[in-house]
Length: 310
Image (cartoon, rainbow, N blue to C red):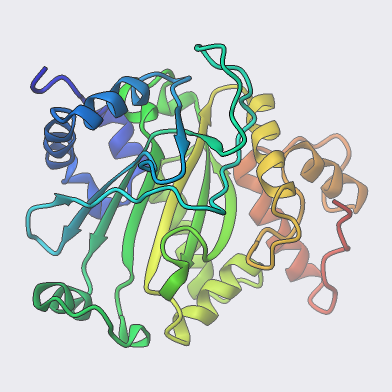
């Protein structure tokens, strides 16, 4: 039905970068236009359920609704990408409402909403003129992406003030767009704007943490044409949060693009205690872990962090 999809204004303003806050109603209008199509209705029926997933086979749509905003121009819905051979999806889900097990060539995927805001003059001019190849090292303002499982905006189950958000910051250029660049996994209880502002200050002030150092280096070398802020999980259960965080980081521990310096979740707490970064009686909240590492580097400028076993 026309106008049936509503995006939570409360969660939108809590999660998205500041530049996207004012786009709330426009994103909602594009979403409702999309749901009038056959595939859009199918996507929406799965997307609004917290447990909703879409099973995909090769040459079927990947269920990512991508909305693009170029400068101040009206936004539009990008073409859906098709699932190709070799595509992978990470999920712990193995039971489905249909009762059918996954076939060998089938993947289960959560419907996502992805918003891409282009503000750099070079990128805007290239888009207007239909230029497909540009010197990305000359980009001054990287494209800003926000990606999230749709149900967190359509049918939120929690309150922002009492919830933890598990996220990734992904950045890079060229063929790594939008999900294959360097990445950092983090957790916060605060709004996206506050946490990202802290990261930006740390980057500018010479923070030695790997995420901040790599972002600073790549920025200086023209290596960032996009930054993708990707929400992975929202929960008010700290144990569920740590389990999801640990699963995500340990699953990518050998990935050279990973910028987390220590294990996460309860393994991270154990690492901090065993290596003397915190007292055994201390239970830091997730937002305190970066300051703990920064303090260690400040007090031990000639030492690296103790090597983690993961």
